[in-house]
Image (tube, rainbow, N blue to C red; front, side, top):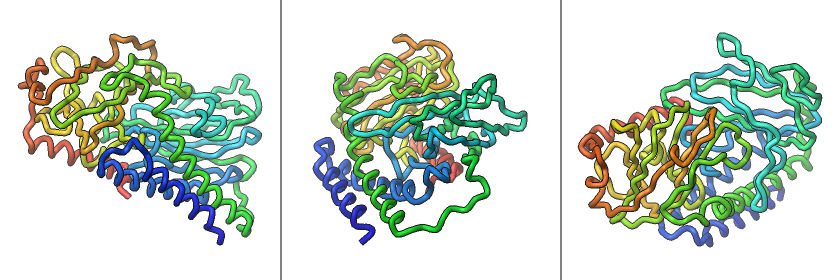
Length: 389
């Protein structure tokens, strides 16, 4: 049957999930099966929605198709491209704090990270007063064309990231067309093409699972537990993004207090990640905060408490049954080098000692009703981005 390669890949991926040593609890194991379902959905969509001859942007990462420690504040779009052809990208700038583009050569695998051909944000090209823009990508040299980007011969993907600092900001639009395919209809589907698409979906699924189980070994798990790195350029070629990474391991009677200066940059965000290297449930729980959402203390610092139990403070990040996982800060549209002074300080404390370790504890407290209102605002923000289904 045509679907045999996909069926076999699903079975292999399920075994990878079932046997992953990272999952210690039933909650983590069950979340692994949710992760598997999202991977099946995403790879089938990618295999059947578009191809390189007729590219289109698809959202490969979202609330139900998570991967790669997805940022709850970001919409991710990707299109398959070929460095030998020319493309036009048109869109309208939304009100989000950042809009960036990146061309990759190759794919993420469990052996390597794809090379970044180029990466830039919307400050690098002209945008009309009404927010409209047009970018052109192709193999010819750019010369003095400001809105033209030369593609390397081995270019394979064009990624777009739209980043929210406030979840009430409005998304924009973006479209890609290959210039020599405009107005033409695709050839009728053949049996061989259908078979290749199911094969591609299956290969994509097992690669996706293997890759993101391996990724933390490279960048997180060799770090001391319950610590975070100094800010550093984010691996992968994002020129104006810095990040700080770490991993946590907590009992119910422990908490992390993470203190970081509120940065004077367009975007600063923090999140927790699961053992599957995905974001935790950020819609129904406060598992991430950016600088627009977080409470800032009078001394200009943001103090976050990471714990399973509720400490009754505004900046509580919920581990929701995940006793261990990943810690991630991002700063974006940064126009200077960040130093250790810009980064987080992490303190492991007994949960009952949290009030005494927060210098503005009385100011940090929040009622259950007000905390529930914060969760309702998160749910509304995600729904307004049309990401609930």
